[in-house]
Image (cartoon, rainbow over the protein chains, first blue to last red):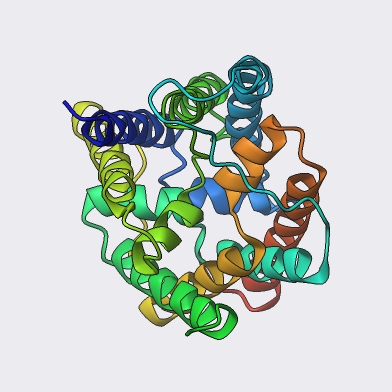
Length: 143
Length: 143
């Protein structure tokens, strides 16, 4: 197999694990997510443990991974370079948060919920693709 | 707190963190679902195959679990589709502007000890909580 084929297989494998985690933790159920965000209602702290469990792994494992010269089957790490905190970051995150709180889906669970043939998830993902395109068209200069 | 599922939340979170570690260790990529999706809908390089495969894995992994262990919760029904579309557009636009979502800034960014990602995470968590408060308790949208 070529390098690209192995990388593609690895991406599929990682995606499978990720989707499995989202389903086992019930994050594909938007009601669970909204109950976490609803701090003034019947608060459900489950999402905090999902995020906590995930970050507990990455915060330890990433240290070892990033100490290496590069990844195992690619030539270099493709890491974000931005480190500054600006209005774009905070406003964008706030807009994302508003949408998250409206329907109870963020990008991962929204896409993973397509597996249950949910019409609302399909409409959400279509809206998400449209919203992304609108921003990218506005922000990315075309030549 | 009646729906709190600490064990499966933690187990799912660990799986998600493991998936993110695999993608970084093998391919050198950040498992940020919004960023992976943006690369598919706005292709600027010939690297969209692995993105499609990761996203397919996300759906298949969640679907496999939902098939093996049908959820005890009943799927939400009657959620207004225009609201799902609007929520999706806000999530797509906001994550494109902020350069990440719950997985990219949350799971991976916090794992890299990025202060920028911490700021993004606090911003979308706060906005999500305000949004749910407004939708559920001010406007009375049943979700």
